[in-house]
Length: 476
Image 1 (cartoon, one colour):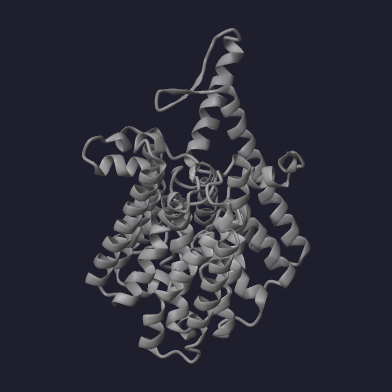
Image 2 (cartoon, rainbow, N blue to C red; image 1 turned 90 degrees about the vertical axis):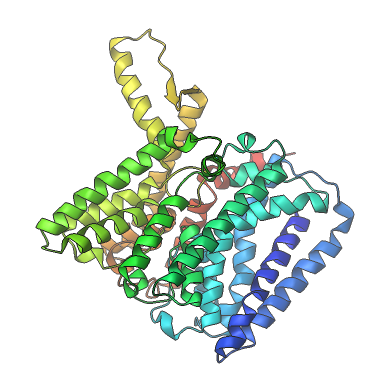
């Protein structure tokens, strides 16, 4: 396990090195912060690899996979916080770790209030943490692990919950490379399209990385509201693409199959966007007297951002009528498709919940009928139904736990509810003091650690954490 952690740190250090051109191009006040952080991270990873060279050929078990996935975010965030601390962009370790963990978990919650004042190389690294955490680091690692004589299957299953990897390629390494390839392709394509608009190359790259990863970090305090309508439309389109199941997206892009159009989860995803986007847009048009363009552009952008848990915003939706804020608040729970970089419960689980509820009503009339829950024409086992129902229940209990804890720590009701769902669902931007015009800087240190726990729980899937904390997990 230490060998894999060492390799992850080695990769993180290499990613830090890619930020150095921005460091010397923009001549930040603390130009040593990124090079020194990269050096420490690379050395630590190299030492771990050398120290564990005798463990080549070991296979990772299911338990190892769960442990590595759960701890990797903490290790990456620990070293990822160094640039923030060394550049003095944050005042203390807690804030630095908060910003780094928020990046790697693609949450997008920030303690920065004047983002334009932060050195540009630090903002580039900030965006890169979300890009790494969104999909690249685990999938890319799995693709490289065979060269270290180690198995990546258990890591892949533990991290990429919901992806039908067996339909892409029989070998896991090729599957990982293909998923990483489409992830990189979307990033480059969005960068070019944004650069073609009103963004410079730096802003285009930063925003494409945080869009494809469903992260939501921006280089501007006003977020996407600082850019043109064209850029907002481009980002909206790529938020939708990033909310899709990457395996189905790959199959569809191969021109051999249009499986994504037949997928019930994807269709429900689009229906949510169209229904709520059009509904809120009509209300903004007639109720708030906005122009047609502004009404539907802001409406669809906000709905897509909430549903994909990206957290971008073009305006302060907390100033809109209360019921609109409630709708966006509820969409944060839903999430988009399984096998994507987004957070939330995921639409697949909601489909199981709805279909199982309808079947239970039918069983009242026909108690002896055999009525399986089917998704995409395939029956879901009873155990699978119970597992997903349990997940939803635990998810809401954790949300309530987080909100109650924040209330006891002095937060107002809106802020407690907004911060709890925004961190657990990895949205970042919520309601109350953590809405579009706010940040997490004013929370106490203890509150920030509670919020970081919610970020981690939402990113690595609840059952992975529960399994890790169970007594049976540590038994031989």
